[in-house]
Image 1 (cartoon, rainbow, N blue to C red):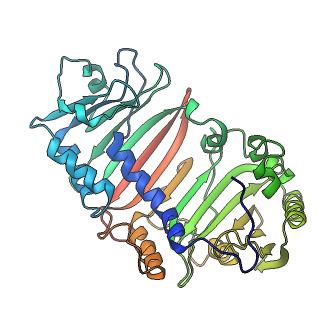
Image 2 (image 1 turned 180 degrees about the vertical axis):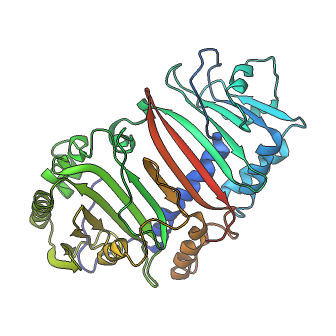
Length: 401
């Protein structure tokens, strides 16, 4: 469906649309855990049955479901409550579906140590939960998960490379490290940094003369990736008071500054020829760039860019770029361990705060949750293995920001 540009007085999406953007990372966290647990796998066994498989320590699974049940008023909490009442009275449980489309949970029963899932249990090691997701024999997702007494969750998942086709190739980590983060961490909701295998070549993913290319010139030199160093980093921050959108920015590293700025300016020129926009210079310290004003696609959307010494930083608006480049505190938090190769952080403790902000702009709206999240932060990192990507995930217990 074509997107029609509105004029200066055109309508914008109501705040409820923006609030849903913040629900996405939060819902994915819980749905992934409740729908199939995550991982410390070694390899995929030919002896495992087809379909979705699960072996779990009952006490750990109960602890996880109780945490999810604390998200009062959400579908996740209601599902967790139903599962809690269906747990068998045995130390270990198992479940298996005949295909990837079937629900795993109705088959939940006591674990049979001599049954078809005994081999899966042996791969569990010291973890509380082991699982396999449906797929061809050498193309299945497998993993383990452990839940501590305090509620921390440590998980590992082994994803086959086939899961990273087309646009998802931008999430396939390269064997070379992505390097330290560039953008500010203060007030962040989500922060991710990656170096995809093969670099950033968005232009190759966009069909020529497609709507995306016609509207946003995604076949431009900038998106072909030749002037970029292959890294990308994105951050979403708490919104400014009274504003209907969170601040968001993307940083793409470059090899040489001058060709990167030239490509970016060429991209802006193409947009200005296609849209009734006006350009405004942007300066923040030594970082220089421009903003495009008059684009009424979404609230607060006046995209800006600034070229630093190492990256092009592109923001939802000028406030987003200023927030992303704010360096009053180090980019690396004091409690961070040395950064792994490719990283993701979701500050779960701040999601209710952001949701309350949007609810204040729209009094009729209901909030995402009436209670705090049982975890304050999700962190993940990934690295390549032969034919797969190993992703380590941690959920830190506690609701304090």
